[in-house]
Length: 268
Image 1: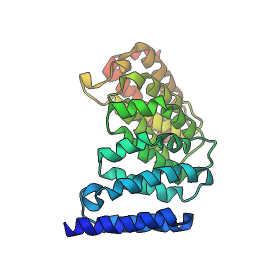
Image 2 (image 1 turned 90 degrees about the vertical axis):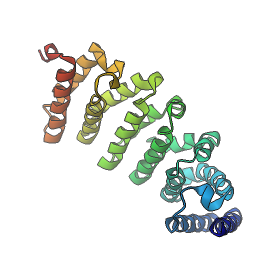
Image 3 (image 1 turned 120 degrees about the vertical axis):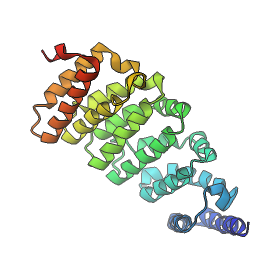
Image 4 (image 1 turned 30 degrees about the vertical axis):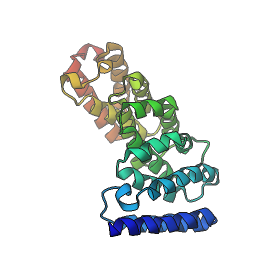
């Protein structure tokens, strides 16, 4: 109880400093917050800070929207969001959507925002945390255009790590989200036709992953013969890639398709 009270009082002081400070002083508050969390063994923000955690979070979502066009300390802000989401507390998931922060968060993926690759990677990780909380949240994210934002993002050329997380986010959006599954599959097929070998590999590996389930675990959309035809054609084209890793992934996808759906005739 003493630790709970001391954490609540500590954060209340930092909130007052945040409210009265300039952007550099606010940055310092966030750094102190991350350091405090790093030294804690608490299992939730509520346990550590009581209601003060939610008060700080609301301020941070508003500040993110203001500082995004200025590119001010976006990496630090996103790391703080990830820290809040690590505890999987519904109050912060709900606040993310109710505050409207999801929209500016997705804007970081747009080519109109020339942010560093690290920022895009962290934004994708935050969005993945939100999507992992169920079908309703996935539908809300997709309705805001997340799938098209991800497609635009990867066309701009990113590091392997960022592309990999983009592929994982699309797979997460596909799972248990029937309303948008076709859109996700179309986006992953587009990955396979992008000019960068890394993007081609992410798309191919995502399909390999989606086809890895047993029987009923594979979505009915993946049983569509027209989808098989497109995937086989694109995988065959990738076999000709000068990048051996792209060809190897394409070969694995072809093997998975032929074994599962017995569609050898498409090779002709």
